Structures are given as structure tokens and as C-alpha cells.
Length: 364
Image (cartoon, rainbow, N blue to C red; front, side):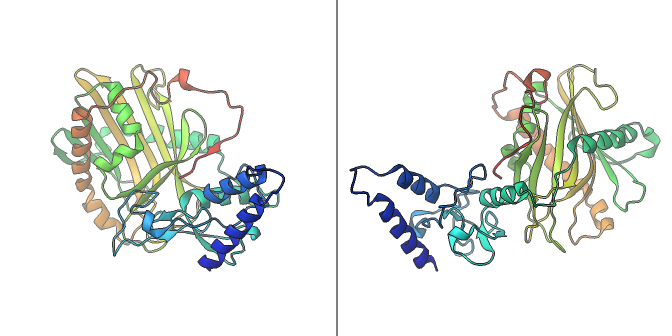
């Protein structure tokens, strides 16, 4: 129980400090206190770590993960691995904790602790799971995109044109869902548009239904896996992440100046487990191109996605036009917001770093 765990932690902490040979806490005591307050650190396996002291309910008014205010409907939940307080959306996982925690069976965990526990499992030499081959994923994706952007204009049908946003669709072989092409003009600098589009926290301004959009794993200076969640009705749970990578120029002409392409597709990843009551829309093909033009920046996107919810494909195709309103909101934000522009844009050659280490997993 919670009380037993607290009593156990208090007793162990007291024993660490009960060192008659000095007036200050021992090194082992300090390490123990840090272990009690910090999320699990997958880089160091501490055999002495025990269940943490839980944060007091009365001291926490907002979710540690999303900062949402707790109410009668949005209840508080403790992560059993770090003791912090989250809402249900930010602590959806159930994980087996180390034996030293003395907690039997799967326990509620937050995103950060869940990921660290999964990393420990994946690093186990006996594990049979393997990560995606990002180079193979990238090569296959570019091949598909080159074919898509080379399609003749006669294959596309105009769907809607509204406030500078033009949306076209085309049928996709072996799929009931159409491919969507969206073209828009933003009266802002090329650098500013890319900077805003890259900032995942800013997406809430034009996609309010998005629960999360965070870097799940950094591959290198140009590529990453994204963890994205939308709160929509679902038939079952999903376990995919989005591979996302920057390319200079277009997919057909990488040498084209003042142009960048962001390519994406969904892949299965052993560290990403299913989450209840949330959808990770599957991106079969994704491409967003940014090109500097007179008066601003033109954005052209191609997407073939599967919402993977309970809505039939026919209805999904009929409601695609509603995404235009989100693009209009995005344009307005890009044109009116005051966002500082960095010296180096995402994907620039000078931003690359030597691959001295393997992919780095971030806390989501």
C-alpha cells in the first residue's frame, strides 16, 4: 500500500543517515534521496533503489506532464516509479517495476518512467526486440515520395480553395483513403515559417485536438521519431511512432536552394507500447516542402494517412476539407506571432553532428 511504501522509504532513509561516525549525510544516503525523487535513470541500474515517496496530493494542483488543472473530472494519479502526480492521459502505462520497489504486478507509470523502463528491457541482452532500420525506412520513403510528386496534374482533383489554402486529392492504389495535397502561401520569412513549424509545442495553436507531439527518439541532427497522440474515438490501441527527417531541396532535386523538405512515415518501434483511448494516426506517406518565394514562403504538403479510428474511410474522405481551417489558423499564427529565428535551421548541413553514439531516446 501507499502507506507501507512511505514507511519503508522513511525507514531506509533513516538508516542511511544513522551514521554515528559523521555529522553529515553519507554519500549512499544522498544517492538514495536522489533516487527517491528522480524518475528512473536507464543509464544506471541502481540495485538499491526502492519505491519513491509519493508527492502530496494537497501540494499539486496541475499535472506534471501537461500542466492541466486537476478537477473533479480530471483526477490525480501517482506514477509508481517516480512518485509524481499526473493526469490519466500522462500516466497511461502499466509496467513491471524492479524487485527492489516491492510492488507486485504491472504498476501505473508516466511517459518518462515508462520509456526508461522500456529502454532497460530493450538493452537486456536476452531481448528479442529490435529497433527500425532508419536508413532503410528513409530510402523506401524517398522512393515512394518521388513517385507521388511526379504524378501528372490530371490525376489530382481540386477539393477546396479557401483564404490562400488550396487542397487537392487523388486516389491511392490499394487504399480506400485518398492522398491529400495542400498548398498555401505564408507572408512570413522562410526562416520564421520553418522555425515555427518545427516547434512541436506551438502546434497546439492550430491543432487543439492534439494531446502530445514530442520527440520520442533522436536519430541524428536531421532525423527523429515522434510520439503524437490525438484524443479521438478508437476501435483498438495503436503502437506506432512517426519517423521524421529533414532533407535539403526537394525529393526530386536536393540541390534546389532555399528549399527544405520534411519527410515522414509511421513505423513500429519496440519502445512504443499501446496507449488506451488514444490514437496515433498512421502516416503511410508524408511530405511537407518549404520554398522561399517572393513575398514569403510557400508550403506544399502531401499526406496519405489513416486516422485508425471508428470513422469509415468514406466519411474521412468527405471531411478532409475541415483540415483547411487548421491550415488557415497556422498561417495566421505564422504571420502574426513574434518568434525568434535561430542562426541555424533544422536540417542545415552545419547542424550535423558526428555520430559517435547511437540514437538517443528522449523522455516523452
